[in-house]
Length: 591
Image 1 (cartoon, rainbow, N blue to C red):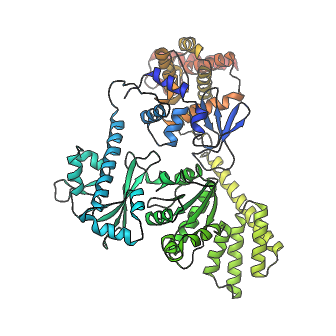
Image 2 (tube, helix red, strand yellow):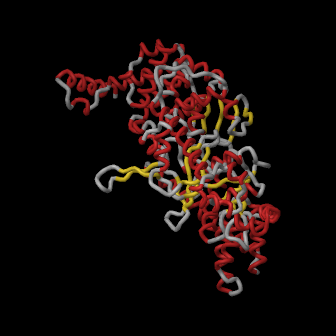
């Protein structure tokens, strides 16, 4: 839908960017501005700056930036209209009807409603005779009636179209069911056939931070494959960006600590045992997005994956992702049970609490893993343990931590700590040189030079593109100069498509609203493009933004346009040829 510009301006004045961002990030003062760890990429030193004067943000690490609407679009994974509505609800503002519902927004709304109705259907089936097998399975796994209710667990009965009939009776269309990924389509016989995606499965609703049912996971009751089936990505669900049970854990996080489990039943068993700060990934290995999401709520994560080889390998992959997100990681050292669910049943919640408190550091986890794979009682095994241990040691950046674990390796192998530290230091220096060489090769090849995915034409027209950027910066900082600049400069004077489009938007929005700032661009540019403009503004604070700089930039663009190039003459006539030869003559005379 088209939201009036006047409302966008009012919303942006009401929704203070510091107030909004402080709900997601720990913001600290940095002179006139604020800074925080960027929630959009992994870092340990704050590189995101919040600028109260322009109500904008920019990350000098990953290039994310924009206004408060852009921030909500990125952090909540919403489109522009949804982000506006989200902020409006937060500040009790009513979004005016600009002339009809946006189609994408309408579809998302319908999918939320459909998923909620499907969850109710599955839960009702679980408590009916048709769901007896599913209920017996859940109670047999030790889940109480209260826990089943808390998680809204359900059952998808055997059959091809039970959910289809139910959703049709509630007014949902087949297109909406397919878009929500609860119904699938088959064309094998030459005619379209629709069927329930989940059949004969215990159902686990996946709920987002706002309480919306966004997807489902289903555990089969027989030997069918896959054992666990998860919803495909939909307009309201991206499995790589969500965590199961975070909606419950977010309000139960003590000391900013989370438990990361492997599956639905582990999470629910841990929760029922009294540890409510538990989450799980959704049928995939941990992703960077999920690690950054956890970093918004926790400084410390205990990985509680299964004790088998697959679980240990998953832990190994998760550790660097969590570390890059700025999270301190520990790993559960579980013996006597294959997973947390079984451990709690065998030994109880009190023992599981002790297990959590004694969880290993990543280094201890790595050394223990190596020790299980070699026989340290033999000289050959001890040497293999030492070599692999030193390799792990070389990855430690903290000198004190490296010193401590070098001492531990020395005790276990009988090799002097000094020798181990010398070997680890040499290995670390070699790896650093290799990384620098790789980076230099990137620069030499041109792959790292002037990389600009938003404005790829900049590399070929560097002088003109920089002049264009100066014009855009000046207009955003001095909107009262828009009309005069529009008279002096035309769209045709711009060489690069992206800068030309921004310039056109500024002229257009200035005429429509009488105001020019980031907020008028947010509805026209995508978040990455907003990041580009925010970056220009952020970096321009240390640059010359005078009126003379604007005039010089306009002159550069005018001269650039006047300079005919041989390629321009391909389809030109006699007049163009005369102009070109006249230019060449003038150049020769100036030498």
